[in-house]
Amino acid sequence: MQRLSNCKIETEIVEIEGISGADQYFEIEVLDSDGRRSKLVFDFVWDMSYYHHGDTQERVHSLLQGSEKGLARSSIYVVEESNYIEYFKDQVSGTRPTDKLTHYLVIDALGASVDILTIIEPVLLKLDVEDAV
Image (cartoon, rainbow, N blue to C red):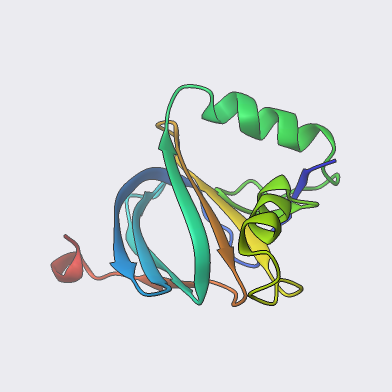
């Protein structure tokens, strides 16, 4: 059963402001609950999906049901026992090693979510006001 666990990065995202990148490298620009802009950097991304719909909170709520107690109040999680990873494994049919894939879930308060499959932990970079887009 899928469940959420804490990511090493903890932040509350109000809005996902933009996603850019290609060739396995993606950046997600976010606005946090303190009004600061940051950039989440994902490298070695093997697959990702972006959704913006009303059932994001319901999805997160259902994933939280089987999750550990003491889960951090954050907008970035690791999805354990991920159906997405299993789906991806079937799609690549053994052409890529998938044993080190991690499924990250990034959500915002407005109903957007990004699912990312990667083999590297993401990095959070704080942006200065003049660097923000």
